Amino acid sequence: MSNFDEQIRKAIPAEIHMISGSHDAQTSADVFNTGQFQLPDPAGRAGGACTSALLKTLYRLEEQGGANGKVSWVQLLRTMRGELRQMGYDQVPQLTSSRLIDVNKPMYMVPPDFKPAAGRKRAILIGINYVGQQGQLSGCHNDVKNIKKYLTEVQGFNESEMLILMDDGNHHPPTRKNIIDAFKRIGEYSNAGDVVFVHYSGHGGRVRDTSGDEDDGYDETLIPVDFQRAGQIVDDDILKILVKPIKAGVYVTVLMDCCHSGTVLDLPYRFSADDSQMRIDQGFNMNSMLGKLGGAADVAACACLGLCVAQLLADILAG
Image 1 (cartoon, rainbow, N blue to C red):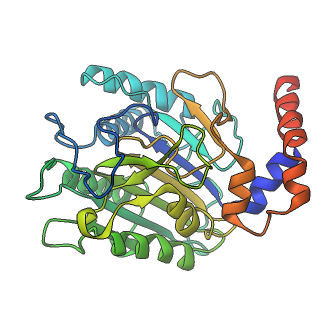
Image 2 (cartoon, rainbow, N blue to C red):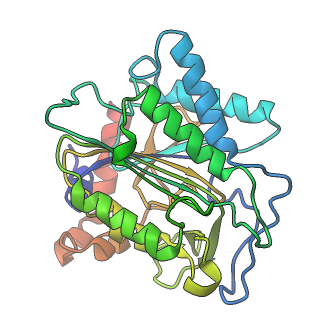
Image 3 (cartoon, rainbow, N blue to C red):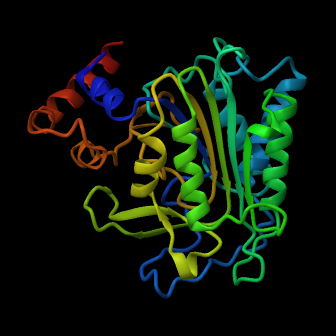
């Protein structure tokens, strides 16, 4: 294991994999002035194309003998891209991760060593249609219902272990406070041996980066139902309240179905459907990351950053 990997494991204890529907650059609207921001025109988008493509792929694989442990990340993302093309979308699904993994090996939502007697399966499902607002969507609630059905019927999750946030009048509303509280609680409640699934279907945005940690100059955001009053949820905050606190030994899968979702968790490794292997995200800034995460940020760590990255790249090329 390289020094870079060791630093990441200290900074992000849990194994986290995020599936997203698009690169950060695949946009529907850029956000420069958050005070004047309005939801983007959905342009006929009924719901999450990524959610639909993922579920179609998983159910098809189940029919062929089971998806969990029977298909690689490469196969999953490339099949998803084919589904998206058939739906008329040019999105390129991608995987980001807290670990440098072999994407040609089997992918799991529930790892094979999961022990029901010792671990629990928890989920946060968020669907926002922005009912009555400009830029209203119409299918994000269905996305949540479909994901819930898949998790319970195929992956063995219990509804009692799911927190569902939707602006449908029947569930807790997906306000900024409720989403942040849900992210905090999943980190507090989950322990080694547990499995976590997080799903977000709604609008995503970008705001100008003020901390200097984003290579492209923008922070990615999730847009809660009350964004006009409470504001958006910036990726720096998601890192602090969701990614960092989850304990070692917890296995996490996240599905982000929104614009600008590619690096919304600020994870260090990335694999795109048109890549051949996982690699360090070119926009990943370890100096700023260590500072944001705390604990691992010290002068010696920052000084050896270049050597760590160089060694990791050498290991990849040699392997």
